[in-house]
Length: 280
Ligand SMILES: [Zn+2]
Image (cartoon, rainbow, N blue to C red; front, top):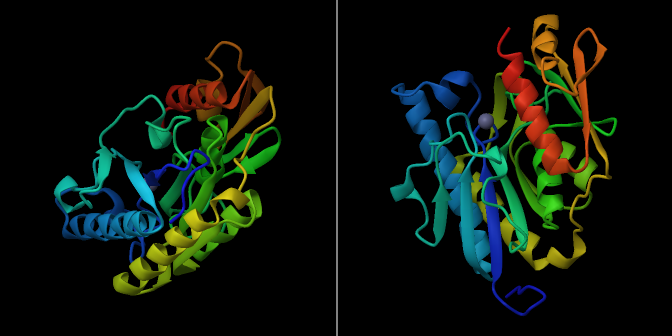
């Protein structure tokens, strides 16, 4: 059984998104409540989250906190969740996809994640449909990078990413030799070659166990300070909106930038800019 540096049972945080769940390939499945496709996708989502929890428990986790991180953030049906875990449900939340994480955790899993905007992944996007790029100190991040950097501020490593083949490659390129579980292969933005849910869950369970057993090998993902965040929107109107925030610099027609002391401040600024930008 893996333990932390104090010899205690591990405390694991799971941020769960939906676009990277096996079998999910279009927006009807990720957000139209009342439609059969969405109801099925919610069950697929909690199935993969439970697999990650089971792997964590088998490797020595004694506490697991799940944060529902997709859309309106109340997708996971709590009575279907493994009873060993707690669930943060609903929105808005101050730290959004990473709400509830603090320095007391030993490891982060990102489950059901998807590729960043404009790269060849199933349902690719970055946080909102209106962002082409989210750049931190000049490097383009997807949601994997965004949230791994928040975890890094708390000195907690992301040790497992699950989703399609593209996000798994994105995660390894950014975070190094972490565990990944590809539950579907990218065919197009709205098409995938999927594993059966039972196979996907088995893959995640095993990867979660391996991730905690190898915990000491993965360093937290830290962003250098000060932090410059640049948002490239898909419309000049959105960049106009983002630039209403005091302290924001217009970089070019589509891009607005903000610089601040640390990454958590940068995330808050970026979310404020995205809110001010509105929708095209
Ligand atoms: Zn999502």
